[in-house]
Length: 87
Image (cartoon, rainbow, N blue to C red; front, top):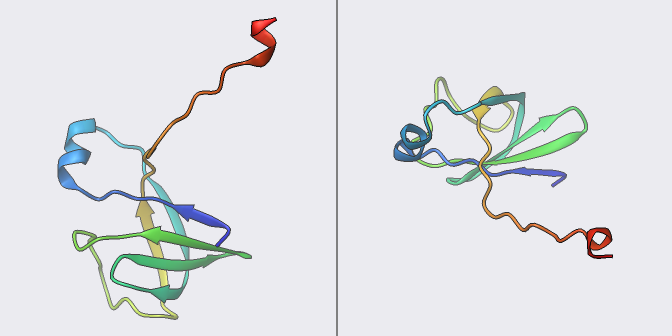
């Protein structure tokens, strides 16, 4: 997969952070599992995590054109020291 987007849909975390910036992707569904959905966007395949709390309107199946609203959350951050600053 060219892009993997991690999405957390827990209501408590949404309310804890207040207004969360959301994004959208639209395209046909290529694959689905209980925890992921893969959508074709142009030449790229986007794999998006989902859970049981995701609101689904209409019949979700492979081949359906969907618009997915998601948000991004950092899972980990590693700051690298600037080697030039040491000199």
